Image (cartoon, rainbow, N blue to C red; front, top):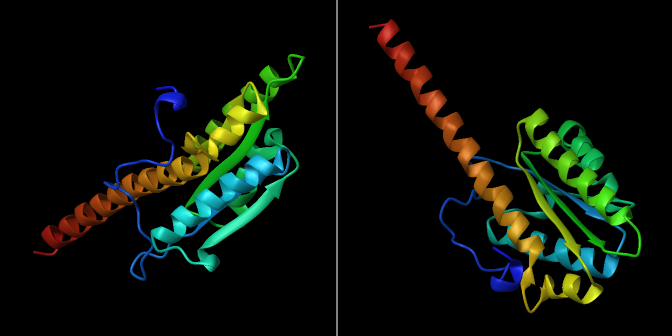
Length: 182
């Protein structure tokens, strides 16, 4: 669905991972410095959303990359070096006069997906790919909501799915041990 038909800040609260003392979680945010007017707003939306679900400042690792093209490598650094449970990638690529836009968007998209699959953690795609600065502003807290909020919710929902699978595995393991020793 086109974001012009949906408010990016509206979502269902079903299935969202919450940070609790029982299950301490850490989330990394990789944010592009390029188009900072837009990306700072995306980061603010993501951070406010994480805090709404129990994340404290110490649970959020915020790092910046020079541009959106560098987000996949920064996401990988966060996955490996910061030991996070999920990463939220935030950036903004605005169409210019050359094909540079196409190459950057393709590389960022593929790279973010690759990090997610290689490190088996949710890596949310919060990169705006717009024709104009106004379209980006509309999706960074403007009339179409905030893509940073949407990306944070996507990361938390995928993280909850992963936690559910891990809990099921633990229950199966306990059941196997119980039946083995009976």
